Length: 225
Image 1 (cartoon, one colour):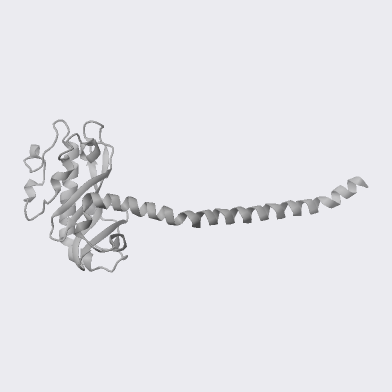
Image 2 (image 1 turned 90 degrees about the vertical axis):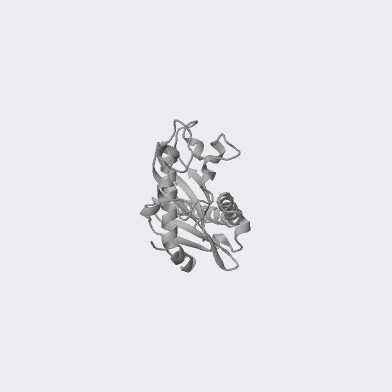
């Protein structure tokens, strides 16, 4: 009789276990959802702050008065910028008028691989700033393209691009001085600055060719080349 009773109660035990697990899953999922909703504003605020820190390095806030991170375009893959996947472009405006474009670019031919950049170009074609966001260049040799790694704190190498434009610098001068161009470089490490200079030059040309269309596109939509 005892064995039969145990056998008869087995389905009931299984059902109760399943019910307990189901309730546990519901409670756990609810707690996770609550935690996500609780932390989401802080996470979003932190992400926004990080984006603005990067933008601030290439374009002073005094040069625009719009909600920069809301005035954006999703660009398709853009070979002219070295990008083989979609990216985001931001548009700075002042008094409703175009002020600058901020976007990503990649130098594919760095000494140790791709060098990712963020570039800000004013509406008049002048470079407002360039920064390296990711690279694998040799520490202590080619990594001076990154501001914090450059030993020249008074005038980091990457700041040479500020105010350069197609109107003020001839195409043949968009090179390092070793190649007969306008830009300084550090002895023993020319491959890296060559790659960055070439990428910036291409970015300036691309922006010049597409500036009016990019500023005219509705915010949030995909731009075109």
